[in-house]
Length: 257
Image (cartoon, rainbow, N blue to C red; front, side, top):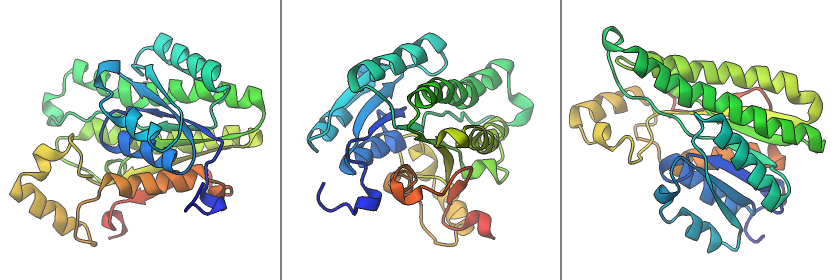
């Protein structure tokens, strides 16, 4: 690898990224490739892959697209098994996939509630479980990085279920970090504020919403996917060897107020 200090290099590592087709997941997958990792792409729909695989191959890294709806245990198991078959192991897991449909608490239906928790919590837990089993069996440790959110630490109107699920991810991160530390597995989370992605475009294009948002962020600007991917690469790297059970805020100072 050129341009990457050895303490931050992921040369020779294998990473699995869920929700890798766009936004933060796409950026993380490419950044991991830039740092030297080969990358397995967990995709809810293989047809949604876009150009992410080509972008990683252009870096000289190997890529494995996978059908992986994280709400379906059989797809989790088959995707992890295929990654082990092709690459021999998984060193790094990025639990990126998540949803957060807005709805006032008085209007949330059981279907809304179940769908959000199925992706954000059930998916994160069972992907971690399946990958963690392989890391423990291999006996060489590993890195798991979960996508929490600033929304897990502050209240956002119309996002009660999403906020609850992201707060739970940060606590799950602590639980897995403590339980799996004896196996050399570091488990951390990152908690971004609003990041400019296709999923947030409709909110960020609303001038009143954007003005209110920026008034809450001391740094005064909306985050970019690269702001998240840089933190993810750091936590996946040897430089973060003594960090586990932590949620790293990527919120421009919002929660520091």
